[in-house]
Structure formats: structure tokens, C-alpha cells
Image 1 (cartoon, rainbow, N blue to C red):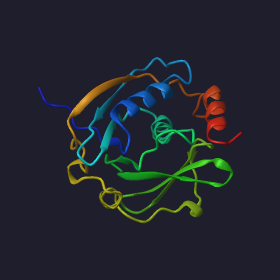
Image 2 (spheres, rainbow, N blue to C red):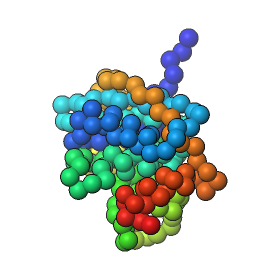
Image 3 (cartoon, rainbow, N blue to C red):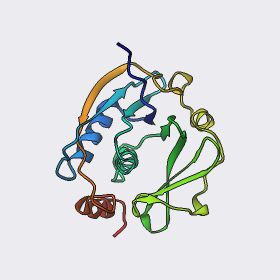
Image 4 (tube, helix red, strand yellow):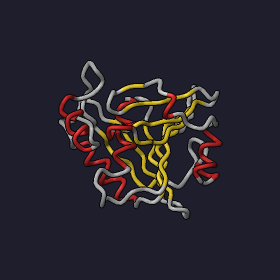
Length: 194
């Protein structure tokens, strides 16, 4: 029997307690009725530098991965906010993303593929956009992690702190446009986009 390969998609967050990350995953999931597919998310950490790693299966839609990353940043001014957050995918076409704010309260995740192609995702439009205003530094995934202060042990799939717990995650099913209409209304209200 062979071991499963380590997950290549992760959210790396510094400055949030493990229990807070778990609670935020739960509240994100509760925004709408759960879907029929259960995913297993793995929480690792925190390590000595205060980093928590959330391993995300490849089968989870990008929409949920990116919105979950934004959700971990908090939605209210008094919410504890991480000091750093990075979405990385080190699979077949590696990329990294960080959130940036856009005009009108929308949220953009901007990053680069390993070959330096631009990657920009607009949470309000539920998809990639080609907008040079949100151009991220042209750097590889490895360089983005080093620049963000991610410890060396966490920079490769399967690396990082030991598993702290696993979470069953049943996000709502997406409609034809890529998102639940109810959740889009809630996220629009939370993130200032109507």
C-alpha cells in the first residue's frame, strides 16, 4: 500500500490561533445549506513562528478555497486578523495568491504562477480577471513564501507542523455562475459589494 501524496493546495496563515482558524472554517460552512460532498481539511500547527497551515484537497472548488482564505482574514474591524496569509498551490501549475482590496470594497486575490504569469481572482465577480492594477510581484511560489516569512519547513507540500486535527467540510453547492445566490448576497454585504 502506498501513501497518498501530500496535498499541494494550502492556506498558510500567521497570527491566528488554531481554534480561531477552525471556528472560521465552521462559520464559513454555515453560511448556506451544506452540499452533498464532504471534503477533509487538515489543520497543522501552529509552529514556533505562529504559522497555521490548512491543507485543502484538490477537489475543493477554487471559489471555496479563495473565499475561505478571505474569510480567515475576518469580516469585522474588531475580528482578530492574521499578520500574513498566503494561498499556495504547488501542483501541476504552481501559483500563489494574497488578498488585496479593490475600489468599491471588492476583494481581489493577486499572485503569480511559477512561470510569472499573472493570476488575479475577483471574489465579487467569482472568477479570474485581467486587471493590471492588481499586478503582484513576478516571483515563484517558493520566493513568495520566503518573502512572506513562511518557515522553510512549511515551504514544500507535506512539510510544516504536525497534524493538529482534521475537519469535515461540506461547502454549499455552486450554481451555474459559480456561487450560491444566497451566499453571494451575504458575502457582498460582508465585503461591501452589493
